[in-house]
Image 1 (tube, rainbow, N blue to C red):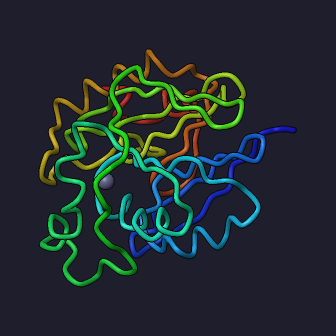
Image 2 (cartoon, rainbow, N blue to C red):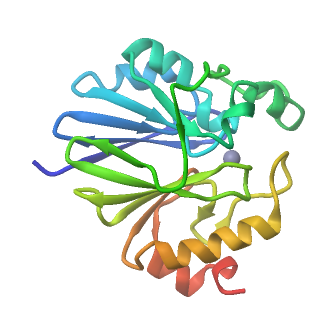
Length: 213
Ligand SMILES: [Zn+2]
């Protein structure tokens, strides 16, 4: 049976939450809000892992309710973990009371590092460290049954890239990350972004000004 990707747009900043499903097993990426509703929307799969591409509230704000509902462990990079449990407080000055159906996540069950591999069903994802938007952003590059897709969080968008003016952001670091992603992600890969439409590396290499500096 072919693997499947379901997409949920959640929260007040329209975050893309993805469910990657292989052999009935599911990995949820970036449950940014409304975790209980995400769990309810996936009654037919076993959620085995919840993973955040980075620590911002709009990517972890649904983790607590989701893991309470499904019992799965949740993972984030070791570099982003220290500030992940204060996600709401760190966003409140920028977003005020507009945070929506979000909660701080609990302490993570698993800390991710460059080169780690996540498995879901017969699919695998390689963790690529992608700092710049936050201290510890990661990209999940599909392997095996997931070859040809990549979750990039807020590091790369169709036609743009993540902002670097928030706490822990750094422009030069993000530029170095983007250069590295151009080498690591095969051109034909579908790029699933944290906000907005999906794209491909081919398209971004041709049109994204941040990849053509
Ligand atoms: Zn972000």
